[in-house]
Image 1 (cartoon, rainbow, N blue to C red):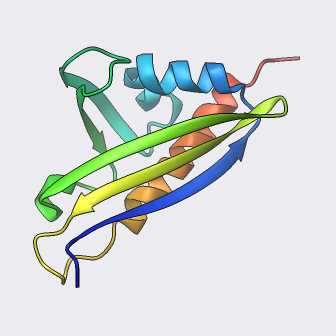
Image 2 (cartoon, rainbow, N blue to C red; image 1 turned 90 degrees about the horizontal axis):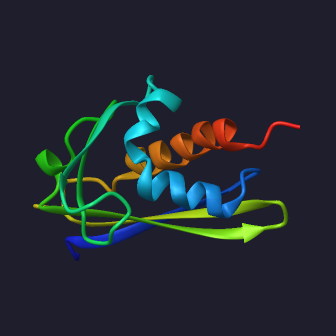
Length: 125
């Protein structure tokens, strides 16, 4: 059994793709305001907000991923869909042993945070 893997989930939201992308790339540190019950804080440790390869540390309800996994990377893709968008989350990880489960709870957290953030980003009529 392989110790590396990836899980993926997508969610359709009503917020425009450009606004969602800007928020998750450049304003991710605001996510704790959008959903404080799920994310306590987000800090930039290395690099620049919105730049590929930046290292970001998030304090969230599920605990420390690097206590459970040897490596963990989170990717997202935003695709325009009508007046809204479709957000795909991909989590790539390496487990220290085969007894560690896939990060299903973290994947669900990504989807839930996306939905919470989207409600803040929907243009008001």
